[in-house]
Length: 268
Image (tube, rainbow, N blue to C red; front, side, top):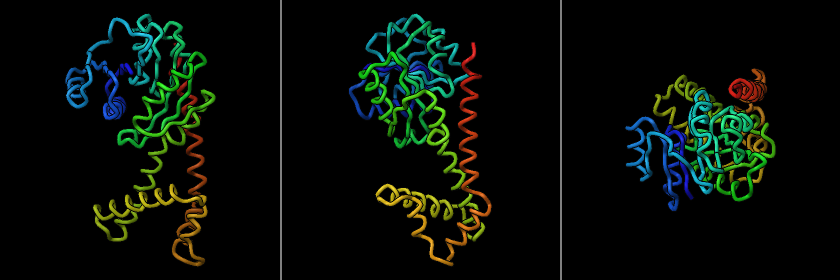
């Protein structure tokens, strides 16, 4: 597959690395920072360009991997060069209609909401296909994102806002909880290295248990709790402090902010 990345930042580099491991792809990265482009070329054997090529082919996948704030300018530069190429945007907040408008009516567009665990091949990406995208295009876009983890197709573009507040921003929620547990561990007398080790192992083990169990996570939680015991006391405090309600409310705030950003960033 012929793939050109517009932008060579962290997420683009992670996807390039995954595709390079698979092999069989012809990859170019357009990155104005010559040193960064040279590093990507050295690490993954890709062709590094400081500016976009004069034209793309219909069989090419063009991945927009730049910051949302500069995407309009980038699209304006690409308009007229795409020749029907499939455009895959991993830029947050910019809806397909805005992309199409900035690309002079280009319609083969897939939007993606990835997350940062893609950097270690454990990502979760939500994908939405514009109406002009056919099954072959879907397969191509999925191939790109499955190089860094799992994927989920969304029937409606509003689903991008929904998945943003769960898997898109979700790693930050997990890190926040980890941070709290590490602070609790140091308060209990463990040093920072021990606290980190304890918390990471606990999360790793709990996730693996949930993945391999047929039981609901609520049941797995209850299985740790003995009546009148230590875990029950901790969960009772979480409930009294409204921890679960706050997590759900925070996720909803995240979803609403995603909608707001789509309105703000998509303006001409």
